[in-house]
Image (cartoon, rainbow over all chains, first blue to last red):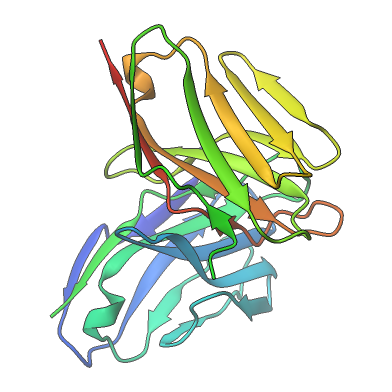
Length: 113
Length: 115
């Protein structure tokens, strides 16, 4: 059971480039989310999905797109990378119910130069 | 405006003693609270949670207390062990029945347990 898998682990982009951060889970979880972690800021929600075909914006959605065509995958697209998007990105998934928190991936460290 | 606040960026305790990590929230709609633990270069891992209908939840060495009137929760670790050294995040959700898909996190507290 792999849990939540994020690729790549590290990435350096030039300003203006686009890329997709991949996230896959094999736990048949309905809920998936993307968070970013910046120094002194905790984790902030970018986008989330409550099921295949359903996505919504979180706290800091600008500059990012998501789609959820399958239960397993929830990619995060950076449309035109900016230095302000330098961060560590975490994907997470969860099943319904109040007793369980999210399962997080190990993160993607992105640097935009 | 930060809705979940962890006002202590760091905490240092001796092995075997109690660690108390605090969290305050401002949103009265929050009805479910979670604590996550994070080691460097890893994703956060779920530790313990509590519903707003309870005031205490216990799991082994970890206990979470909730004071709704004060909008305050705390995580107690007894006894503390060096392996507990990590960043601890408090998180909350207003799921309206407990759906936990939209979490608001605090900034985290770095706990260091000294041997």
